[in-house]
Length: 110
Image 1 (cartoon, rainbow, N blue to C red):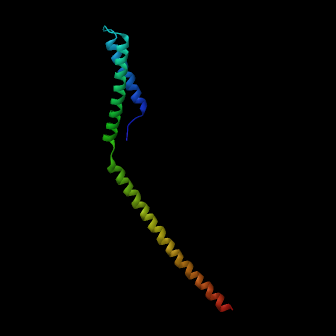
Image 2: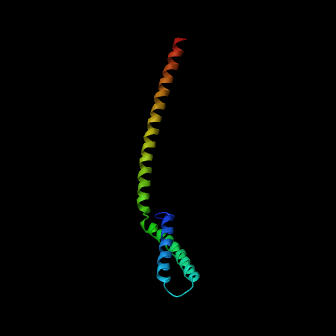
Image 3: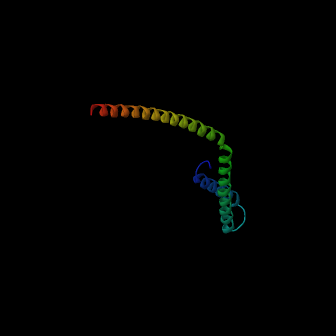
């Protein structure tokens, strides 16, 4: 479970690229090495943000709460199903009694 979206990773990559570039463009060195270092810093920022999002999501994930909610829902569902079955069996008994009465009435009229 992760917090946020992949856009956060891209923002982190952009931020690390910018910070690295701003700190190194004044130093003597070829522009290629500065840009290459900035791209590697951006990749590192992207991966670090990915790991950070995963870690925060793992810390904030609380399975006990979801387990308790599932138990409550299942208990409520089981109670409701039991009530429906009890009502259904009572209605079947009533229906069979009514059917028996109708059959007796038909038999006595013939």
